[in-house]
Length: 420
Image 1 (spheres, rainbow, N blue to C red):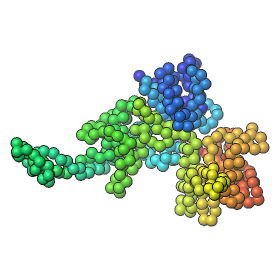
Image 2: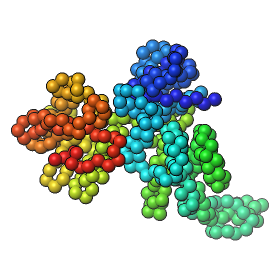
Image 3: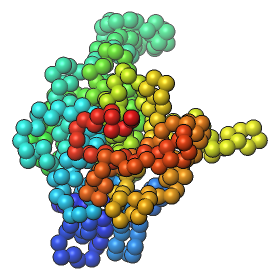
Image 4: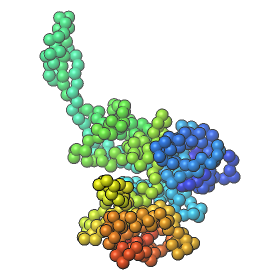
């Protein structure tokens, strides 16, 4: 039996009894707890701290958001912690969907979600709904077929006679023709992956509308085989212009089949589990907002890695990797995003800024801007950082640091907020 636990970043999960589950502390069953511990050990070996294990009955989640599905049927939905106050799961879930859509550049057909209850569905069902919506559009346009060579024995000639093989046949099989011919079939990597994702959705969804629609579409793909090697098929996914209408559904297939880059949970168990590092989601969200605001006026690049902190034996060492670079005309801005709830009221004269972060920005300004220009630190907007911008910090007369907050509830952010 499936059970769902809804929490947010840095929440505690425990097998001990709790009075009532909240977004910051919730009870899970023993089997789900053991699975999380094993999963956390796999992540830690790859340098990714999924959580901190406080005791054999208590663990504390890190800053990953998304959904985890354990083999015992427990679904753990982890939402963003955008305020220290208790908030509704619907508000945090809406924020996460907006961040995913914007940062991953996903076009979601919101017009299909007329029902408010369906719009506020859990993240896993939302992912499934978006996949089914894209698949429905794709099936209406028609699947892409391809010619495939078939070699077989037949009692009649069809296509091309395989003379070499025919000459090697024994006299007793003189009445059989070895032929080679083409068949126009939908059996190609893209369609096999779609079929596999649809089968996974049919087994995973608990929403009546999703279940009905998924099985209706599965009946249209009964003759199509599933993917036996999803990783290889994703590598074979064609980028040909004839398959332009396949592009929107690829990302959803990656989500469903645990192949997506943010952090797909893989292994022996293949439930629908996808986690996103909140720092990367926030960074991508800000970068996409900047691209929309700038348009053709300039360029936005992310994860710039062209400079080093210093030189050693003629080679650059300690590579610098600022989150965002903005270029408009002859002006440049180096920006870094921080998914931290900055308390500017109780942080003293430095507003609670991390000394490490400020030193990092100084290194960016020195090496990337030659100590002349604008640096920007960007934090999420919340009750204790309600200002759009703090007073500037001056490293020198020619190099200054601006500290901004971004309101995640605003659909479109103006360029003036980021650059002067």
